[in-house]
Image (cartoon, rainbow, N blue to C red; front, top):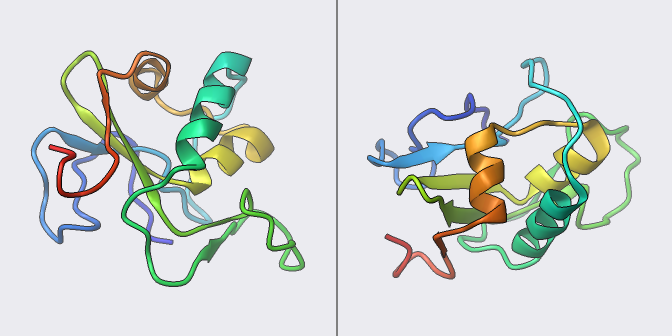
Length: 131
C-alpha cells in the first residue's frame, strides 16, 4: 500500500492534492507510527465504517506487519477507503486497513480523526456525493 504521513493532504485517488482532505492510517512497512490505546467506542465506530467502504481498489492489500501466512480475514486485507468529515469541516480519508492497524498493531490515529469517527459531521457513501 502507498504510505502517506498522517494529516498530509490527500492525493492518492485523485492524483492531485485535495484541499481540506487529509490522509490518516496509510501506514507502510519501515515507517514509524504512533501507538497507544483507543476507546472501545472508537474501535466499534471505526469497525462499522470499515465494513462499508467506498472507492474500492482493484485487488487487495495485505497487512505488511503480519506474517505472510495470514488468512484472508477482511481485517488483515483491505481494498477500499472510508471518508469522514469532522466538526472542523475537514475530510479524513483512511484505508479500510486502519481498523486492523488500530486493533492488532495498537496504531493510534490523530485525535482529530478519532473525534471525527466518534462525532462525524458527514460520512461519505460514494465518490459522487462525498464533497
